[in-house]
Length: 206
Length: 206
DNA sequence: GTCTATACTACGATAGAC
DNA sequence: GTCTATCGTAGTATAGAC
Image (cartoon, rainbow over all chains, first blue to last red; front, side, top):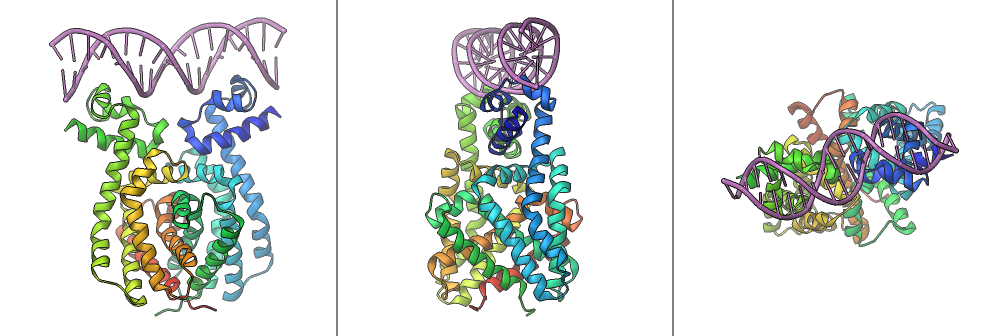
């Protein structure tokens, strides 16, 4: 119980302020417990940080799991089937980027991408790798005109479109003149993302 | 002289570790001077942080300035002209994302996007706003079939494609099985980015 | 298991010598 | 202008009471 409260407070604090920026005292206080509980349950600040990474990986795997399930069960072979699978994955990813609940996760991961620590291994092996591999398998099928490496690069750019919704959040809000992403804006964003994704996937060689 | 050394060390430290994570002692040591020099020149840690934001904004403005100059001088009116302008801007931005020298800048900006402080105002007003406004003007011209808001969203996604090269750096390297982005990979990435950007800009309504 | 008390380190700010 | 010395605060870790 205190274990869980510590973990969820830690996600918030580490996500918002980074490893150095977050304070174990503040995390303990937010959990209504003493700082030494962190030592008892996680062995210290670093142990807590790694536990957060593992928890995030599990949550992502759980959220993206259903989509992956559908895709993998379907025995996808045609470019059109692959396109539909990719659309579903991009949309699920974009929804996660938009959801305020996952804000701390995204920040946590983004920090780790730029300055990877041991936590990045857990994130990548626990969740990201599965996503990326499925995605890359599909895009190779969807774009048979491209070499494998070129197809991977295309996949990276497709992911980037969704990523910007979180990583460029402050600028996105300024451009659209909003404070946060409301339901209508989200609908429009997803519709537009669908359109741009489709046009990239249907891109004709010049 | 010491002023410049402090500033450049600060960019590196703040970019890598964030505001709380960076230590004034470490920055001073890296500059070969005493910590109190920071107080003298910048008034304190926060003053130094803001000075870094301003410096980054200037650097970006200087780097992206030439492209903006060309675009604005050309009196762009046709969709085809706008497409060429957008391609140039996206490419310039992607080059900046790939360049290792700008790694600290990007990290600095990304942090500010997710948890904006007073430094974000300086970044946005000093550099980002000009870029974004030019970009959005062009995309409205390039995609006359879209409403303005839809066009803006499309522009956001286009930027995201380049952004992922920095923000998802660790994953990009894993997918492409490289340690860092070499010249040949950079060439391929830019070529692919050009193709996906073009297909988004030429997207036909269904 | 959880809390209190304490030890120890590192931080940023500041005063004062040069 | 730059450095040294020092202060107060906040950080993590740890020992020990309950």
